[in-house]
Image 1 (tube, rainbow, N blue to C red):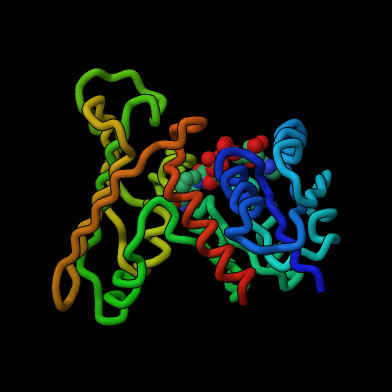
Image 2 (cartoon, rainbow, N blue to C red; image 1 turned 90 degrees about the vertical axis):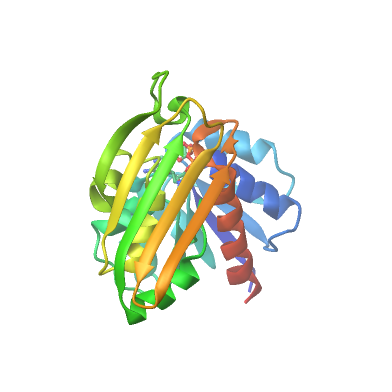
Length: 245
Ligand SMILES: NC(=O)c1ccc[n+]([C@@H]2O[C@H](COP(=O)([O-])OP(=O)(O)OC[C@H]3O[C@@H](n4cnc5c(N)ncnc54)[C@H](O)[C@@H]3O)[C@@H](O)[C@H]2O)c1
């Protein structure tokens, strides 16, 4: 049976992912794409020279029977389409993880990659023994947060669930952490810092048998400073595993 990949969202992550298919980093027989902005889908198709089908909605995407669908669109897209996709028994990779905090989807077909961070295996292991405290400090250049401050400024302090709502494009990292360590809570601090060029995430964990400190300094994607290149590569890595299996 042909192995097709479905893609919702033809922006930065969708484009990097499609380029990985073009370079055969991910092996599949074709891509079926949907974007609410049809011009984004047209532009992506025009840049590729393997079979790409543009569809006008998610129902048409599912009718093409993809092996796996990647959501690289928005939290709204996850809210609108996720249940429908997993109900068809199709694997779904979610990038806009913030949406999953308010949805209660229990399905082995639902997957999310580590995104712009990593080390989730160690955190997931620690959950079994008991986690006391998780803190995420994210420092981003003001431009990546839509700010213009000239001094380092704390723009948010609070819980991951609220951070993901207030910063839907920037705080999927907080959501991914929260989904991994639940029922433990994640305390988040967001700093708009003109001194940093990279999107920097520091994660401190105190758990029953030790402590962890993880740090990621990611180049923002030139076409979308909200998004770190690592997020797209993490989606590619997960898609590769799922299409190989
Ligand atoms: N998990 C992570 O660590 C992580 C990291 C970076 C970005 N993200 C998230 O991944 C998503 C994609 O990021 P990006 O940088 O590629 O964004 P982008 O803005 O470059 O592209 C998103 C595309 O999706 C389309 N779109 C938006 N809503 C849609 C909908 N309801 N249905 C269909 N198409 C829709 C837009 O028209 C756009 O072309 C964003 O939600 C972003 O916040 C997650």
